[in-house]
Length: 267
Image (cartoon, rainbow, N blue to C red; front, side, top):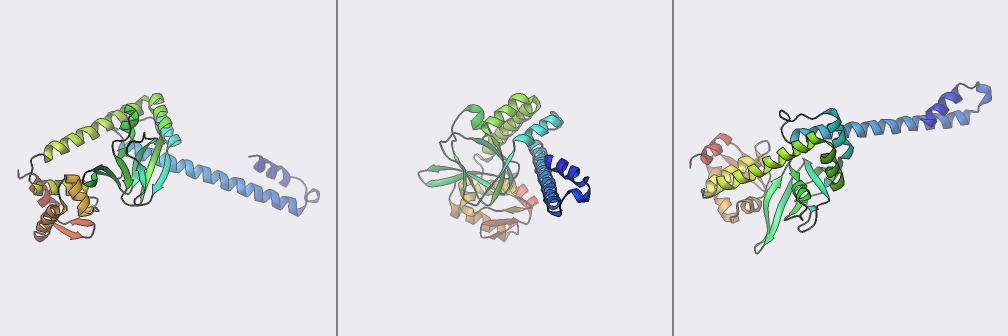
């Protein structure tokens, strides 16, 4: 602002009272101030868009609508972080320092057992990690790392706690989100217990698909179901012969979602 005022004042001085060099320098300063102001506005606009997107991912907008100041509070605290494939986000046993909302890409949640590293869940756009552990004050019971290049929206621990304390509507929406995730996990466990492997694989493919594509290697699919890879491979090949899916390296293309859904309801 000082540079703008200086520029305006200088340009109203008669030409004979100022040199070409001084005007040029003031013009450069004015243009730089304008560019800096535009960058700040663009960054604020991007943060606000991210905050709106997060608000749609968390809880029910119908029952707990957010106010403008709630979204602005989110926008003030959100930071963007990009992880390369294989980069860890949260480590087993560590106290989480931030809440993560996946914006784009895929995260793997894994544990280590006698058989080695086992993926137990994948997180995609709109999924959240780290908030439950922060709320409970407990270390991470698993590790989280990027399966592919992944963009995350981060809320530091202190900002997350401040947000919940000062914005009751956000707090209520977040409580609904936690409840939804716990109910979904419980439903998934109960629905898979005692089911044939074909039913389990079909249901997993439908849950993990993005635009009818499941971008997971068969070893990860097997780990998610707690079975061996050859068993999953046999089921996928059977599905492929029936025209339900198309298999390629690290990828399953769903060709007949209705038929897969039918398999999940047969039992």
